[in-house]
Length: 367
Image 1 (cartoon, helix red, strand yellow):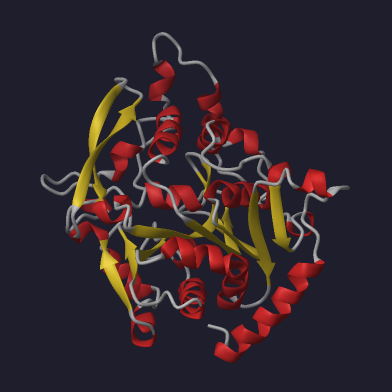
Image 2 (cartoon, rainbow, N blue to C red):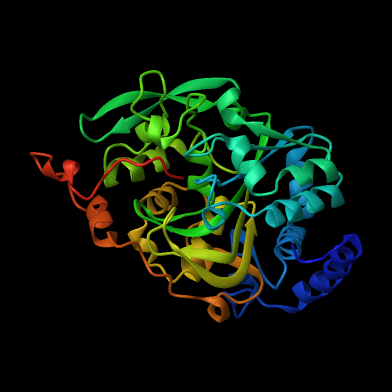
């Protein structure tokens, strides 16, 4: 981790605050009347230090976040899709930036870092990625959601058009939890990109203790994450949209310091991007991330569904960008090899449903 300290945070806070008053939003308007059309804010920072970038991205929302947290428990949800691959998972420095921010607004007294990793024990991932050093520095607990209470919800399956029961983390569904999605910017082989919303929805389904990919076919060793995939590209997009009503972050942090392109979320390659996004409107955060990745927003089914139904602000012209300009930091991320197949969600379902059994769709336990 690059060296930083509390003094550096305070110094960059002052500089960032002054700069924010001088920087125009990405969508500039000619009159105050038109500026009133902006409905959400997204902070975009750049730099050479993950923790510092995260801290600065969260600062414009200090009062808003402190008020929203109130007396609720704060749940930092990393995206550890693979407990052995750092590129696929949330970096410890990003979490430290969030913790330093919470410390600065006096909201560090009831915080947990919680995950249900996709391919193995969450605590093993925490150890592999250096999370335990956070426990020695901050009053924070590390929690394996697979060992906590769960609620039963139902999701759609496109093979039989029936609801299917899923065990979902009670902590993430609990209205007394203030959910912070601490995600990594990645392409995805099912829904084009995995960002703040998908991190929460696919982290919520739990798995049996001892589950690994190799044990997935053993009796009594199951992961409910596969059920939420909905058996196809239509199913997974619809389930992400439908579950967003119950499962969504109250605060979105997207680390694009080193993104992933290609066959994400597991097998992609690194992108040196050096950006960080934060917003109290998760949809706006994901929308800005899509733009920064050079992805056509119209191709991302679940985010379009959420935008169309008012789950947040998905219209870029209504989002105020605080800090850096989107145009200066856009990159064209290489998409998954099967990106054309993913577009099937746009087409009507055929009468014989042959498309639902597309040979290129294979269930995986990904987030």
